[in-house]
Each structure stands twice: as C-alpha cells, then as structure tokens.
Length: 367
Image (cartoon, rainbow, N blue to C red; front, side, top):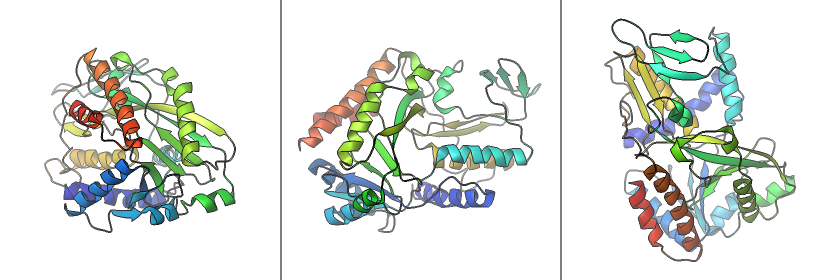
C-alpha cells in the first residue's frame, strides 16, 4: 500500500511534467484537494479517516484535518465544519489533455482513426497476431490494448467485466472577482464533501465552476446509449446542490454533459497483458481515470517492453490482476440501483445527525 500510494502521488506530479515537456496546455494546476465536512456525521467520519491514515504511515504532508475556520479560509462553502486537505491532486481539463496527446502522437507519426466501431477483439496465437474487427476493416498488430472503460460492456463476452455507471456534470457561467474573493479556492483546489452519493468540483481557468456527481441510474443489461449522457433530473439536482454549496453563484448553468465510467466488481482497476495472445487490458478506474490511465499506460508499456522485469509500475497491486465479473441480470441491476438508493438514504440520515443502518447495508452490498 505504501508503494501504491507513493506511485499514485508521484504520478500526479509526473503527469504535469509530461504535459509541460510535450507542450500541452491542459490547464494543469496542482492545488491539492479539499473534502469538506458539512454536517456532524461527515466531520466525525473524516476526522476518523485522517487519524486512521496517520496511523498507517501517511504523514501530515500527505493529509491533514482543517478545522472550520481553516477550511472556510480555503473554500467558503455553506455549513462547513471542517475539511481534509491533501496536496496530491491537480485540476486539469481532460478534453484539452486528450486533444493535446492526439496532436503530439500525430507529430510522432501515429495514425488515429475515429468514428470506427470496434465489434470484436480476437486473441492471437502461435499462428497469427491478435486482431481488432471493426465495421469496415480488420486490424492486426503484435499487441492490442483494450482500453474501452465504460464501453467495455458493449464488446462480446465482456458485458459483465465492468458496470457502466453514468456520471454527469454541469458548468456555471464565469464568476466575478468578488465572488471568488468570497468563496476562495484561490489555489484552484478541487473539492467535494463527504456524502456517499459522490459530488466533485473545480474552479476552471476561466473562473467557472465545473461540478459533477453520481446518481444517474444503472441501466439494465449494462446498456450504454448516447441518450443516457443527459438527464434533466440529474442536471437539475446538480444545479440545486451547486447553489446550495454556493448561494452567491452568479448567472446560470451554461454547459451540461455526461458519460459512462467503468466500475469493476471488486472496485480495483485492472492492468494485464498476455504475451501469448498479445492482448492487453487496462481499465476500471471508477471515475479516477485521468491519473489512473496515465499510471496504467506506464504499467502496460513496462509489461510489453520489459517482460519479466519488475519495475515500479509493473509491481503495482492491480497489475496482472483480473477481477471477478459482475453478477448476472437482474441481480446486477437490482444490486447497483439498490446501492444508489442506500447511498442517498445514508446521506439523508447524515444531514439529520443520525447514524444510519444504510451505511452498513451499503458496505455489505459493495463487498
């Protein structure tokens, strides 16, 4: 765990350095992250988390508890009772990142093909290389890397590999200097609070708040469709929560979007390579895909170029790990949506200052 933590923390820094080296402006700012306690139950839970972390070789430079005054000085949200702060996080614009990576790779001679539906990935053997079957062509290569995340369930034989869960986001209009003088987040810290039904946000380079959360239902059969990228109900709930956090928010919501992320059954990402078949897999980041895909890419590169050699990336605990599959339907649909309902129920209990049995049921359901 110490090796894993240090690798992930180091990756946040080295990803920023790699962006600089490649000349990619992805609005990277390493301002850390704040996890706010906005009711007494959240405060108790977060303080216990910090104490447990400090007893497990996590130092004060890695994670610290801020009292109410110190927390509000960094981020003046409503009802703040305290917060945890870690420097090991960076704000980033993922779309600028991926487009910048595409430009860099094309300069290096890589061909990128978009709008090409992949229908199957076939393993290789001693006689032939692995193949990617598309709607218009067949591609052969020495190695094929499947990095399809939330869309993995659409490939034959992989419907139960990951559960595609939808996460939706909104962005506010640009806020004034007086708003930010009042709210803080002057170092572009990312932020959340400790509710079970996850929310997350950041201050953008043009002074908007980009804000997202979970809560969209899981769709039967691990179905992925473009229409699920939008939900008027979830967008409305997100805007309501954003205005609850920042009552002085100026203007309306200008952008709304969403998409599926990949949730593995054991909550562990997977990086694996079979040299005989030539097929590698990487995914299952459960929403932490920006830095985790960077770590996974380094691990896959080491597995391919240095077979049998132990490197800092190839020895991470999720490398050559293939988690168990999700349950068959309708158990998968019932379990995941029951988990969402329990998370919402536990959050309502937290707001009333009560310990809810929903917490225990949620823990048992996930495990």
